Length: 110
Length: 115
Image (cartoon, each protein chain N blue to C red):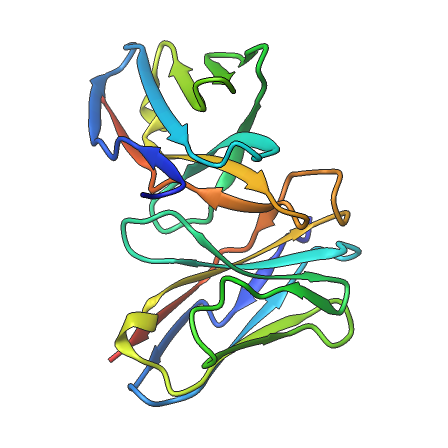
């Protein structure tokens, strides 16, 4: 079983739609949680950190449930430029290396 | 501003050849990571340096993989006797500190194709 599980999609949604991604993880010792965004043939870039209290950054809302080992990302009013692969990521270990899910592909359609 | 740079950006190697991939981290960043990303998958951790010390190499898939960072800045990932399963994008990331700040900054990657 992979340490971080994500629905691979693809998710194809119209502009303006709200879309939600979910992710589960198995390592209860994980220290920090993130959503990264990766455009085609580009490097991953940090979208936002995820906290138990929930956090929002503009149209993006992230939530962490440590008891259920579950992370979510909600994108409201989706834009064409949101089309990308969204990676659920946690950090663990003394080096705080990152463990990535396989990613969920999102395409926002005009 | 200067981010993480990697070279070459693309590398085609015949099976059995040795390759060397270079990473220039952000200046002053203490931590450096190598990840391997296969097609359709998320990146997977290979190895970690704190300055010149390789503190974790648990992700290296075989003894054909070797990494170094002799002066605590530039790092090289070497793959000996490449195999087809080594075909992937190799990503380097750096982080300012050893532990506290979590954000890692990724380079553009080296796309390795073994034929």
